[in-house]
Length: 202
Image 1 (cartoon, rainbow, N blue to C red):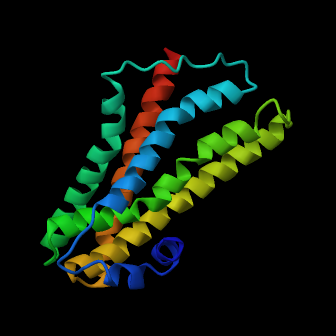
Image 2: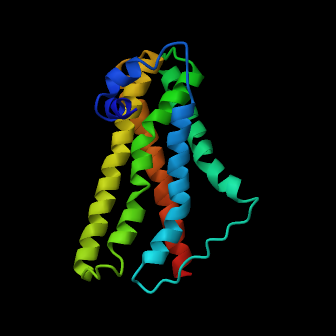
């Protein structure tokens, strides 16, 4: 498993060349998406618990019926990502199936799952345990944000490699498809951040 993850992250062309056959397996991509979703779910509670900015701990009680909906969100996003990449690649004369597109898009989510841990690490690192000076806090936050952006483009690189092999199109076309997906992803999060900022000001 370690070698496969290493190949996915650092030799994606070779990795996805092995993932374009008639057989497919959604278990591992599903696990990648699920782990990212679960980390994203608990992050606000952990960060507020360790925060030294005077925030009260968040009430971690989640209604039983709402819990599956929280976990369903990342899978919906995975499906939508796959649909967008599939449609773009088909417009570029792609020949791959949707199920393999779904599988390999899920593998490409791994860098996004990794960056979902960053708020946890940042919240704990900048906690009362160290009482780090505020200027250092700001530097760490900017560093984490920059690193997160790099990981998002890393996911885009994996998607480009995945679509090249899955859809049997040129790398240039797959790169354009992946770049469009990354811009949509960044645009969505920018809208969310702007919405949160407006609610805090009102």
